[in-house]
Length: 94
Image 1 (tube, helix red, strand yellow):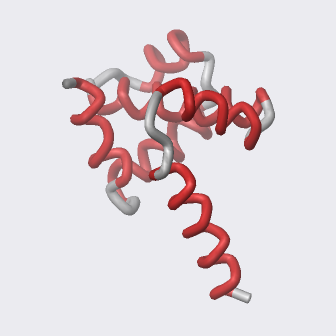
Image 2: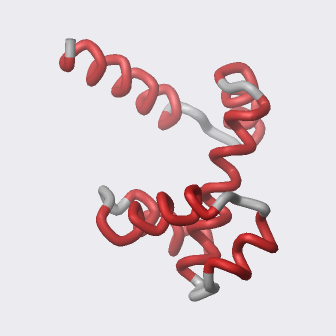
């Protein structure tokens, strides 16, 4: 079971890596995700950027309308996660 999930996830990651442009990426994610799922992912990335920039929870709450649970979850991922945010955030600043 775990291997099957790993294989499914790898297929998804390979599909994302196969995209060549912002337009292709946008179209793929619009087909793949619901509007709510896209909003949630975009919000988490924005929260990660703001935490990385040193903003405090209350400021992030006001700017993003993210719940404190979401902010806390993203902060935990920044501190103790797989370093995905730490990999992508500096690249987005370029």
